[in-house]
Length: 154
Image 1 (cartoon, helix red, strand yellow):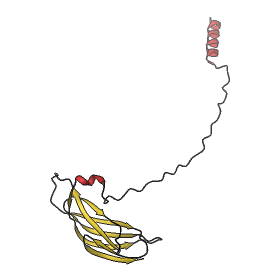
Image 2: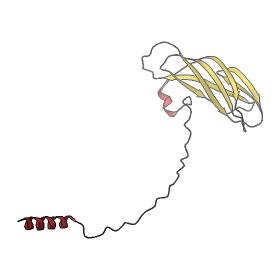
Image 3: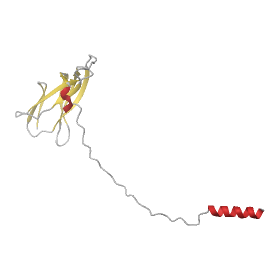
Image 4: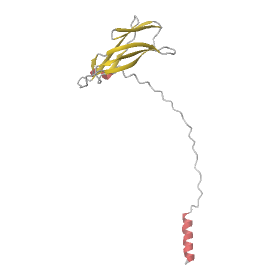
């Protein structure tokens, strides 16, 4: 009986064994690839957009404005503006036209809000660095809402 039991155990164990040798599969090498995505810079939030047409326009209160010039070549002109929006629901907008023939840059700063929205009637402070850009040689006079901010020459 022990022999039969031993023989059955032997057959069962040999059935579990894999008689074929496992062959290694082909190795695939993957070369690392660097993908560089060119990001398009997002425009500043203060620039007008096409969806602004249905919004209500309002004035802003400007406390101070000053010209800033970046270091580097070419020099970029910026305006640092501090002021107040009429309510917390208003959004700042800045219209920056090209200089006229006399070198005047007539910037318009205003605010927009939904016409039917109810909003708390308190002023909201803003501090914004407005990028004017790079200008060719010449003399320029920068205006904001009809008031002179400063001038620069290149």
